[in-house]
Amino acid sequence: MPPFYNTWLPFIYLYGVGGIFFVSGLIIIKKSGAYNPNVKRHRFWWKITILGFFYFMLIHAALILAALYL
Image 1 (spheres, rainbow, N blue to C red):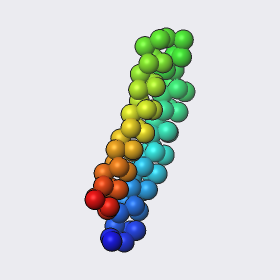
Image 2 (cartoon, rainbow, N blue to C red):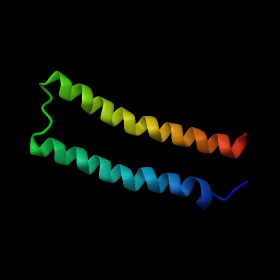
Image 3 (cartoon, one colour):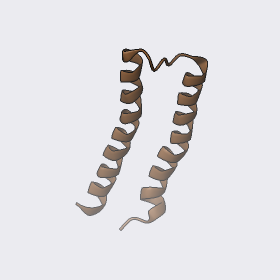
């Protein structure tokens, strides 16, 4: 079994630090007025962006688990 720092630590770093940059980008987008929640297309792409982050995070976790246990 590979050690924690070779499997899960990079995952935590990638989505932890990357998540901080992702959220700060979303905050900048909101504060600049580029996102208008009253516009249906803006709401659609806002949800796609957030769900896409978690989608790739879940795929990455599933592939790590598959590599470890299959």
